[in-house]
Length: 110
Image 1 (cartoon, rainbow, N blue to C red):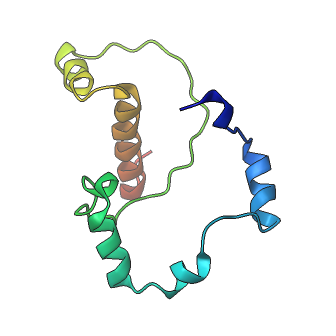
Image 2 (cartoon, one colour):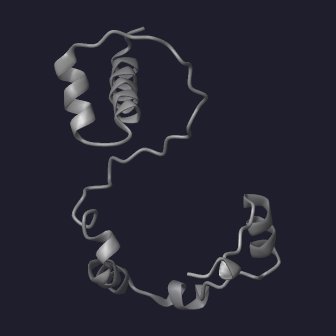
């Protein structure tokens, strides 16, 4: 790909383009699609293949918050387990801890 064809926009520039009607998405076509059409398109999309059969009904929207750097000692097998699944293992450990915290809050623990 030629460097000359790469265009970069900030998030604010993209928001302005969308608000100015410079969005390239055919929203009328999207709005006209039935759920079956959307699911068929998803099944035909190779980028969606690993996610098509996930039950998203219990998914939660998580807005990232500022992280605090700290040193923590974990058992080696725990670190190995999370690292074995690849890049982002610290984020996954954080997600597990966040889930535990939210379940404890539901139970009324402090």
